[in-house]
Image (cartoon, rainbow, N blue to C red; front, top):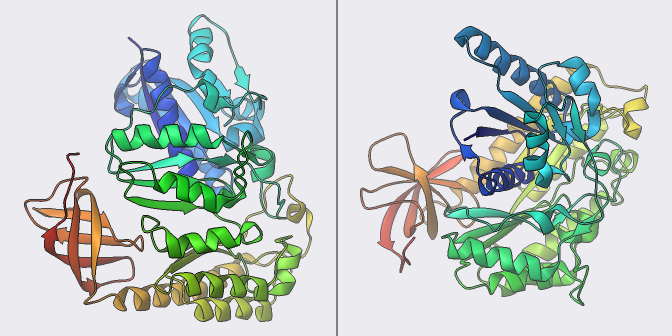
Length: 444
């Protein structure tokens, strides 16, 4: 019996894809094991930033070196995901240890591709983006966990000047409402109490076969699935926000008070150069609408510093909007040119030292806002979904409604339980809570 191990890099959608790859291979008779014992190692890659792509080649070398050091046969190495789609056969030219390269829309064919490899076929590359979606060929969900990801939309039509997603994931494509609800039901029946809907532009979702045409309608439908007690979504695009999506935060009790709405820059000039198709005022007006619907909403975002042409004044605009919004959390990165994107050809690049200094200042500002947001919760009571053990005895870690990590110490806890806690201590990245009572928990 062949064995396999999947290592995932990058975003939540890659985590979801890795889970689906594992389920597909297990349905074909393979067994998931630890990496050191695997006959097949799958590296599911991200191509958003340069360092993420370079990490792939480091991993390939590490896997091959370990086999040589242990005197064992090199495992079959399959590269999947966005780097596979972007670089194709170049991966094999650069790293001869790779046996398969499979794009993110073709991983449902992994069983047949691995059989072809076992039969002696060399240099297998499958980067097809078929008209028939991969989801039509994947096995039923079998994952058992307190929370689960569910992809509802893939691809992007926005063509931001810095981003490779339209080239590696293709154009925007939505899954049918019926298929999403069927998967949500399977996840809930398997014990998932919280579901996070995923998409490159998740709120661009439109039912391709029915009359449901708004993301807000999808949120209501998934929230109504029996067993789904908490609902989240990521990542949304400002241009795809609808009034129904805003109202969902006021009307759906299962929808957690969180919104990840990437901005990338606080400067109108840089937003235009990035081809974001919105300006600062449009974004701030959206935030006001969401907060009117749900005043305690936690807002998170993405930022890029050092985009070509960014001046100190542009960067100060970013700092000012961070304070104006008061983000609960934000993910910030230095600009990294991606081959094939419009911004990669610009000559007005920012010095690396300047980018590093601006990134440090931005992250300090974000950290201060995160700490202030967490401290504003002290003394508040909320429900926490327990997900995993902490480092200390009887210590458990769960998620608050606002997506904060909450540490609770109690010997009676276990993954999948929802407990009512009082938030008693706060840092920038987590809180500590004291259990007040156990909720009416169904068997998990």
